[in-house]
Length: 311
Image (cartoon, rainbow, N blue to C red; front, top):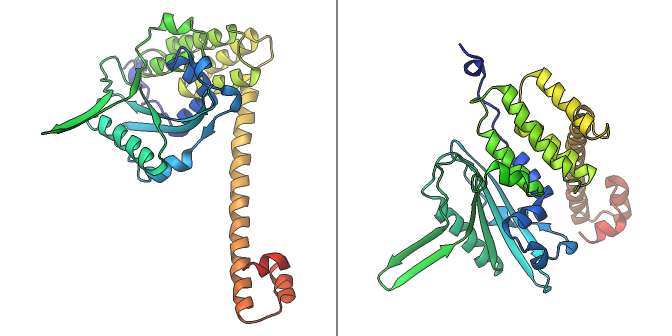
């Protein structure tokens, strides 16, 4: 049995990993999709990610077997001072889904109906060469017709040599997607070499901050997952060498893990505090209904007199 046959199926790419890399590099995603992005968008005003609004219009977004979705709804400012919403819908799907165009239309009309804001819709397809890339939904019924078109991109619209010379971090993300489809099909040594090629291309641009490079390298190592410890160690040493010793992958991953654990702990503590606060408010409200003095209620619940008076 060959080494490739022995290897188990690679880890599934998580929605969180995809959303994170898109969010961190969204301006460059727009530059990748729109050649005139810097004359269209006012990036100095920042971006607003609208997960809450997206969840409100599609609360039960399904995850069909074999498909992963990472949706982003982002408010951007244009150079003329106006605001636009951009829906970036990313599907990790190796097959073809006949219902995809309707789902894109469904997102669009629900956002338009709820918020009365025009939405630029983008679909990014990350399957293989034979994957379809539907960019239109429509129907005709006697005298009535509807046509909805949206912008599409398929990760093999560009070849490797084109992506490597773009000097755009999103191009390297696309290349990582392409190479990820080779997992479990080629030897890990070859995949490791491809991973190093992508890392070197990004570092040699001399265009991005150390933090951006560090974040991308952590993504790259997770996304192009290699089990061989020696190959991973070689990658870490390679990064250390080509960056002049300024980036140590082992240290970075430790820091990232600590940040995640700290974030989880902070979330748990906040949830606990919120729960205790709600409990105190409920008790204070009952005492207030019973006619107990506000000062006594404050002393017993830990709430302020002002908070109790507002109940």
